[in-house]
Length: 279
Image: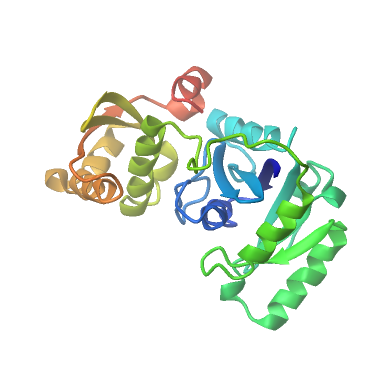
């Protein structure tokens, strides 16, 4: 039996969460086209007859402009410590540049694997160009994949499995994530808010479960300003209704979701509030 922890790092929106979901064979991390969707470390677990791979999804590394940004950056950088393998994920549709090099400089890239994602969106010539540019990093290995279609994902899993040391299973074989149920539901609410609200809102939204009396779940949505509260609720409660419908579709039948919106002024710039919200 082989087992170990594998961290995925990279700039925002390179597809780390989608890739971890593809590797695990089911959704363990929320996804969005908005940068910095992932705010905390999420572990997805793949158990095979010969190995257990624990994938660590991390927030996108970026130039922080708030206390929340600093916190999520610290979470990502801390996630490269004490793991068995590190994968640097690069967006194959974007030019390889300073941002990718900066992330690669946060750890020993010569012992890491470069994963070029989103190859379903580029042609062969562009992929060859990306591989050529990324080769300047002198990484241990390079894998082109598409987290969306699954192309190349199996080869990446096989390669990572072969690199892991012999060891015990860290989680029961039926477990696919280490997220508590309450955290998962709160994240699903935030994911759907990212999908249906306007661009200026995503960074100002936080979610948390405040009551859990199955099948009734109360989720609090936190925004920074009074004007944002109305945008999240929507005309006649339309936005909240749509979000609730989308979240219930991903939960067991019979679950009742109550959504409430609260204003906590400038919460993402206040370290005490960030910590209380679990970031």
